[in-house]
Image (cartoon, rainbow, N blue to C red):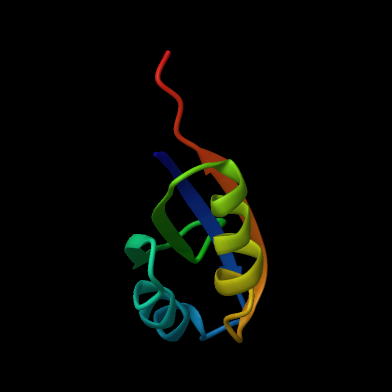
Length: 77
């Protein structure tokens, strides 16, 4: 199991709507709109890195209003 935080930038005024839509995607465990350089922070999980990439590229980035994402996989050191 791979987990990641996905940091999302949105168009102005779209953060709450984007977070709500992302929260409904299978594999997303949490989506919160926040303040700061990013507008939404998402916690997601997938079976492997390839599936995580598909989740981000095919589903999360497809949400209207997103301008940029940064995926940060969780590591256990």
